[in-house]
Length: 235
Image 1 (tube, one colour):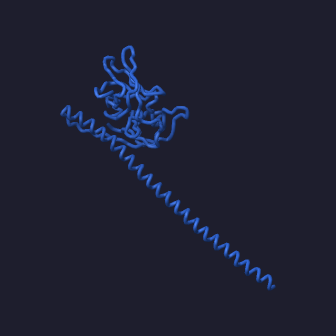
Image 2: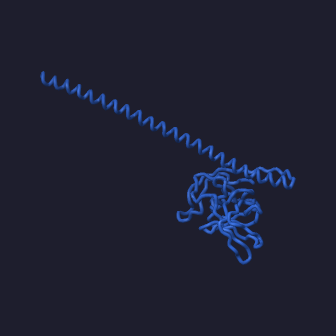
Image 3: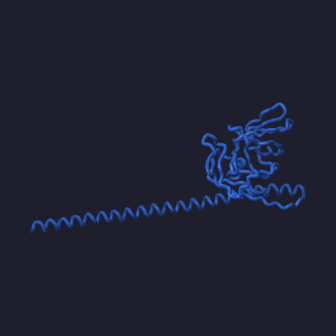
């Protein structure tokens, strides 16, 4: 009985020491995990805040371009017609087809399937929004059905932007006009899809056709489709 009692007492001391160490390790580990979680949550909140600010700044930049372009026209024409452009943020849901990177589905609550909308990515033209069986579908710049009116260079040479799945072209430029490599392409607003002044890209090549000219454009919008884009709902 004495031996048994002695060993059980020592055993309790040993086990108690082990439990204390385990508990201390657990508390330390718990504090480290909580610190990591708090740091992660703080970073997530900061990321969300910065994203919200970025979206707001993008919208402000787009509207600034619209107002500046319209104001310039008003000053030239001495016309004070009211002008109320409106830009709305929409969410990209995914590609329409996995093997076609020129079309995306959009979450667009105020979508009117009878209209065609201008689509923007970080303030630059990214394509158009049309109806596909009543659902809003974004046709990116590379899609052949993404067509809208543009100006080329400081002389505002008129043309029509259209994708060919590989690159962006501006077609139907009058033969007597002289577009140059390095000219900037902007939306003209003549089609009612975009307002004037949204940047599209830079001319990289001029192609002589029989009755007109075509230019190849390197777009400002990237091939990567962001989670959120903007559409022009009123111009």
